[in-house]
Length: 483
Image (cartoon, rainbow, N blue to C red; front, top):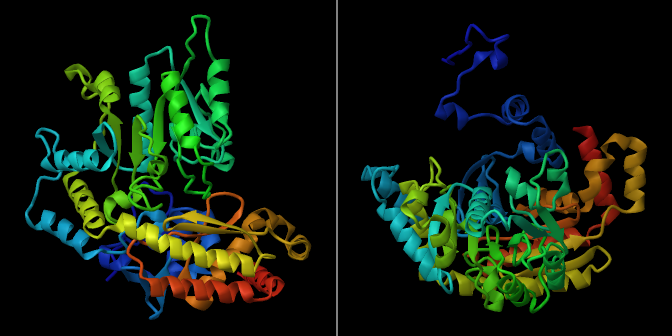
């Protein structure tokens, strides 16, 4: 019998007052999922899933590089959970680590005791990272790690060097400070942003020097104290010119600027290095990371600082708790991250990413050349690759303007959406779109993916790109308008 719950002070009993138990949630039907998402989560999200035809799919379980649907279909996951699933879905060693913590009734929150899991994880991070990157803080999300790193840099620099420089095309998160140093205007324009943040072109090291010198005061010191950088722009797959990272490091040293490297997307082997900044052998002052760090199960992120930066900012006993968080350093999350790092190390997944990525990249470039009228550019590194497609053609645009002009704004990524939907519905392959207005179809599978699965994805992509473009777009638009 369904339990009904309707407090007396409610204006009305929504959804007939149904109260859900865990087993109820696991058996929600497609129509009810859409209804509940629309009414209680996000109506725009519900509409977007429905337009892409994803609302009819019920992911029942997942293992390795595959998602298993309730209807029996087996979906090859080439998204890697947008780089969260570097070890694939439900890795057995990750599951065993979490099961061990539960069965042994380990202490969950170590606020009054020193945590062995935090200590061990921090030691491992110091061993992985180059140079004197030594002291770590573990939090819950990538955006939170950016916020914490900015606070540490601000404390280190003092009140006279509070200016923050970031680059165009960047994305560091959607909390207020992280958003203020990101370049995704669609996420920024509705909100108040932090003062003292300055955007410069990515890939132009001299632009950093110019902004620093333009902010130099009479005594010869600039008020720019921090530069936040993605060595690779993971959300848009933009790579710097050779030598850029080294020159940025030199400029930061020259002007006493804290260099923060955002490795949230690209850390832990994604680009064929432990961290993308290692491609030029530099050492940042603070490194932020998340995603693969949690082994696909733990909501954990962190940042690690050089000894000099950390000690000046938080080294004194009275400063040691200036930055903290209720859920920082949760035992099970840290234990999961410890096991994730050991899986990467034991299986040589960083080297494997470089090798498999070379194969994936070469095959994608072949497809790009084969379909050069549809594919604008292929770019990537390690197991992070994307195809940028040419935008909506004049025929398709005219069709949309004629039958549904109010829907035209959502078609800025039309060709990418068409490829995504066709890969999923006709070939059981899941990819995703880059976080920009470009039609960037991204493949970022787990670091454990097998070559035969890469071949399956490439064959499916080949078949999709071979199809008549206008017919695909016409059918896709027709399906959207009929929903």
